[in-house]
Length: 485
Length: 134
Image 1 (spheres, each protein chain N blue to C red):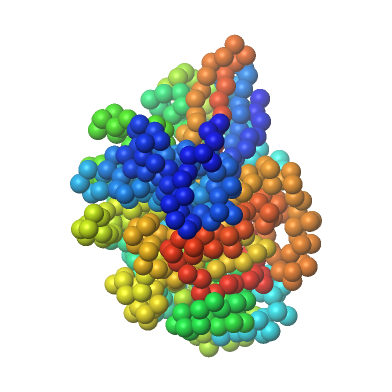
Image 2 (image 1 turned 45 degrees about the vertical axis):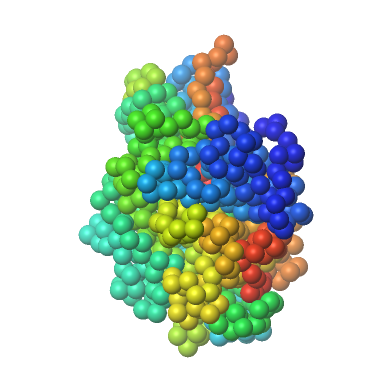
């Protein structure tokens, strides 16, 4: 933990630093760090760069081992990192996705204004808290049962909509249309399925949340108009993932791959990078199970959105359609995708691992919903609960520089233990009160651990992405009511 | 004996001291000290656990993961352990504790990781740092 990274990273251009391939013998590609000059010290701090270097040793890794501005130390792979590998001779690694497969964010609109909601924020927080199961060990009321869980895993959002949890038009505005191809329910262990059965439509705990927000500032009028956002408008952000099911799939896959390094002759600097060739039986099994877990998470966020719509209906006494509560977009930030990218001047399908990183496609990209074609894919960047969240749009440079990826959120600055030493829940609550933010948390402790000061300033993270040309800010959102598990 | 340790994104425990059985028991108690904010109450229940793994680290992770699963599915919070068998690759234990009513006030652990995991047999007893994904 004693490496001085300051001397190692070399500035290549605005907001971009490089760790040369020669830095360590076993690196196959250089490391690339996207961060503004202001944010760089926090990037250098917690030894996340050692993990970026370790990832650069992976067999078949292409172009570079990428660190986004919200990078921090994780398990094996850092959080806030991207690694693309060749399908021919590259690997796929569960650690490059994370335990919470398809942890992600979605944003829905309303036609309410800040003034309509301000007086009811406390009530909204309370109703949301009562209808959305959250907290440690919480179970949900939406039960597909053993008969239908396979459909959830193989149809994702489609299953939810078919069963009355949402609208047909939600599907188009979800990454992958809320269902990844290649998902196979049969690749999940019995235990993973067991864990998933009672957890659909649950929030989870930790840094997951539901926030009622308002658009404080619009940076790009045309893009905001296309995204259906305007200053003062009330929106709702949902941050959750695949719950126990995804964690179990990751765990099972890590076990399955433990012997693979030896079997395929890999030498890995860290056991938690355990991986197998994308094209191997182990690699294919993992991908199929991961895709199923990803679909579960999309179904979960869809169900959560359904419950949010119901909560609003209760408080405002009118239907969610009338309230204009349509989906802006849903993004995954822990996932591995098979995507077409340009590599050495040729278009090639590669395996892109994003762990704490969000896909960001530019205007005109075929996977961007038609309505947004002229603007690009919305990128949702949640901050911490006291400060802001952002909506961005993907830019062309991201395709060249980061396999179409940007940051996922604020990124932690302090460990939970350090946060507990620095903050107390009364302080945090008072601070939020002062800003007029109503909060309902299943556990007071979470407020300290998730205190704004425990996170990097998301504005700096977003600014770094913009400086590097990866994405541009469209709007800034501020919390009005927060629900935390 | 266990002690909670730092990690930027998550949390860990340092477990040390004692014989193997005490070590495995303390690891479990340490994990549940993170999960539960206060001593949980509930009907007294017991669960039998039988596991095997390729090595000690794998066994420890499997042990804690099994307890995590029993907590998530049944609200089980263990308090006492009786090991019928405990060696480097095999574990057989009877665990007694409380069946709590979920959800509870605490910290959700998503998974037990292998991060920096090395189980050592030192002069002062068994020792390991175990990190959890939150």
